[in-house]
Structure formats: structure tokens, C-alpha cells
Length: 282
Image 1 (tube, rainbow, N blue to C red):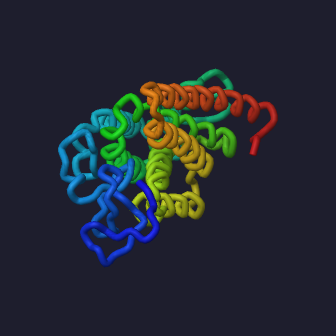
Image 2 (image 1 turned 30 degrees about the horizontal axis):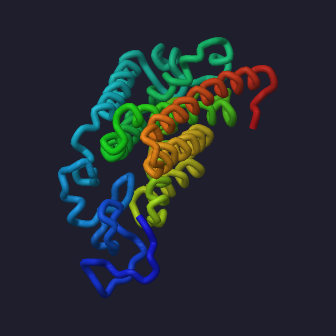
């Protein structure tokens, strides 16, 4: 998408706009925009059934999104049958919750399992709604493999944020991964010249950040860590790779995102060890 001075909407010549359809390049005003994770589409392009994915047809095949939602729901049901709560009364909760001393003691798997546990039905319901909303748009746009890499890198980034800011607080939830998806979407839209408040993602990010800082018992580190890693991964997958002429750019971006996830996992172990020996790092 490009900004071209005083161009006018091709459907409304009396309206000036700085936004163009990311598919055909025609200038479009807000009334003619169809938002997608990779830019705005004009009404005609939004109706296409080709490989150009729009917000209307992006929900066609978000298989991995449904699998992730299913795993989260099944794990939450297991929590309910075993007893759950913020105090970690159930075995499933106790064995999987992200907790710095346990990670430092060798239970590294918690940096993943903590992202599939939840502290209540509202917690899991909100996160799964957000995962469905974002995954239905992004997964068909970038493919299952890249979407999976984006999701788990964001999840691990969130775990790293937890272990840096609050390693002794038992922490659960898919929020870190969800924040990463929001960050990736916002970065992709900004690269197309779309203002942060011009689409629903910008307001969604602002609302969730406000909630993060004003409501008690919400992991600030988990949300900010997921957001940072998701935004960086989103830039590589949704912005950098599509702009390159090299055919292997997508694979290079994928490899870097996977490396980021590995680095986050290594950082989690280091942060947990440091916290046990010296106290919280931040």
C-alpha cells in the first residue's frame, strides 16, 4: 500500500485518501476498505476467490487455529475435573503452571504448558475468542507452518517476559501468544500505511494494554513479552519476506522466527536460574 499525496478514492472522487488497495493499488477511502492482516482491500478485490485473501474469506481454513483452541479447551476441562484456581489446587494446574523455581529445577516444559492452562472459564473463553478472531485472519494468509511459528514464538516470548518480571508468581494463560498475534497484525497493517486506530486491531491492542496495567493479577511481563516477540516475528513473516524478490525469503524469515523462539526458550531457562540464585531480574 502506498501514500500518494492528494489522490482520491476511485469510487468516491470527492474524498482524498492516502491509502491504496494492497492488491490492485487503487486509492480507497475508509468506506471502501476491507481490512486484512496484510493490508486494506478495495470492494472488488475483497470479493475475489483467488489467492488474494480478504477478511471475508480468510476464515476458510484456519485448521491449526482450531487445533490450538481444542487443546486449550481440553486442558481446561482437565483442570476443572482435577480442581483448579489461582492457588493451583488441581494436579493438572500444579504440574503445568509456569513457575520460575520449577523451571530452574529442570521442568522446562512449563514454559510451554503454562500457555495452555487457564485460571477460570472467563479467562479461557476470552483468550480462545481472541485466538479464533486473529487466527481466522492470519493463518490462511501466511500458512499453517508460519502461523504456528508465530504463535509459539509469541508464547515463548511471553514466558520469557514472565520469568524476567515475576518469576515467583505462578502464571498461566494463552495471553502472551494472543498478544503476539495482535502485535503481528498491527505491524503488518502499519507497513501498509494504515493508522493504528484505523482498524480494529489498533483499538484492540490499546484496550488490552489498558487492561494489562489496571487489573490486578494480570501478567504484565507475559503480555509485553508476547507482544514484543510477536511484533518482531510478524514483521519478518508479513512485511520483510513479502517485500523481498528472493524466492527463499519466506523460508529465511521462518527460520529466523524459529530461532527467535529457541532463543526465548533458552532465555527462559537462564532467567529462571538467575531468579532462584539472585531474585527477580527486573
